[in-house]
Amino acid sequence: MKKDINIEENKMQNLRNLIKDLENQAKSKWAIKEDMADMYNQDARDTEILLHAILAEKIDLVITSLSKMDTLPRDNAVLAIIEDKGAVWTMEI
Image (cartoon, rainbow, N blue to C red):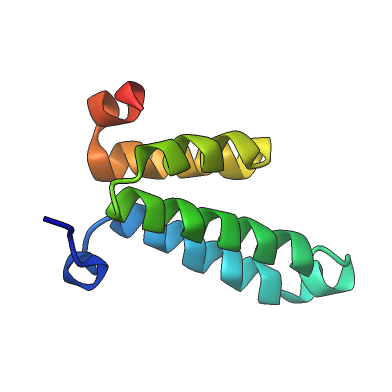
């Protein structure tokens, strides 16, 4: 049975918070002035793809998404996933 992603709105809260933080950083005066807004927006999109892959239980897509992310956003995403899913689940992927 396929899970409805909408049912899991309150799951993966740390990863969702990371996405919001990245989106907010993209809107910051500093990011706009230093021409970094696009980078933060891309990191937010990459993290959102990762979130949807996790919720859909598409582990191959989770692994692929993580491997394509830049180092710092990937590390932050992994830490958020550990908080949301636990270390064992995260290590198994």
